Length: 185
Image (cartoon, rainbow, N blue to C red):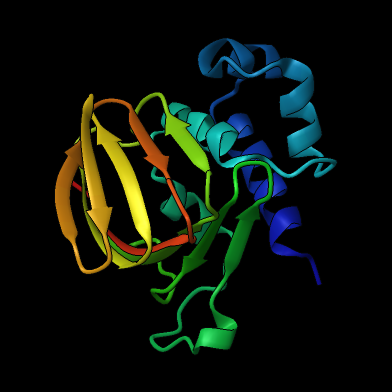
């Protein structure tokens, strides 16, 4: 049985092939080196959240949609133990797919956790106009959306649409844990 990382690597290679792009084409479009892209597609390295964000922008799909495409499909109920978890050790980001995966649905729920001091930036939205609702469960999070910084703490909820860069920073002292509802435009 292939791991989620193996399925992700294969899906990224499929997306590039579907468009008829070479690795050089993808490197030019994403700003990621050809060698790194090759290693990611072969499953030699796991992409960081930042790198995956760049690829999602090029492929015009939210990260959650891409990860849904490599998860099991069809279940209406997914128990906690069966929810897919993806970890980016470099940035300190852990992403849990809470919603049962289905590529045709317009909304999904994701749980995010950032370790203290973690700093994660995305240059552009994967899908311009993507609506998001971020509800803080624990800790504190400095979220910058289109140049405007929001200092969020447990219980706060911020609704926004993605049109430009975003930055997630956990100032500490504990981890930041939040639910993110993504709604396709």
